[in-house]
Image 1: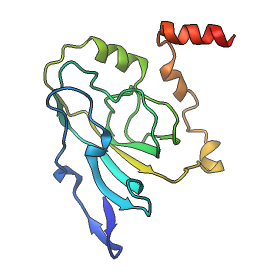
Image 2: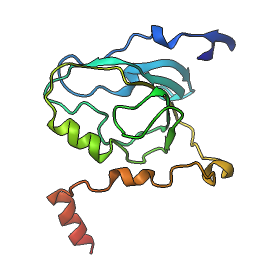
Image 3: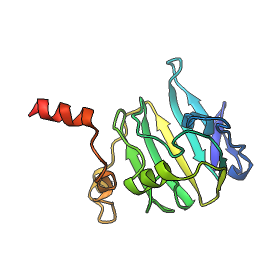
Length: 177
């Protein structure tokens, strides 16, 4: 990875040297603990851009859901795979990427959710891949060429099909109809 620091001089950083952080008790920590570089903005607490990685790491949290849970971000999130596979979405492989706009809900696919909800929570070392993420307060919009590319995954949203609907959601749907 090459980046700029302060005076915008190029800076080279070996991602293998990044020290991963994580929960050693319970709960899935916020991905910001994996931030490698931040470009500050004029707004306190809001980055112009964050560069985050999800490298090989131990997952040891107890009594919790280990993959990234369903969430919405206050920043746009562009994610991609450098090598291997991602731990929260089957089929997300090296060279693949995704874009989740600000406040767009997203999370693990059904297969990952089902496995994570029933697995024994003993310590596990994830070594299957290296993912990266850029988060920014800016609104990201794919170019016309990217939006119409024949290689894009038009079935991406299908990974969330089949989830059971909670009784709370079902009653809300009935009231809306």
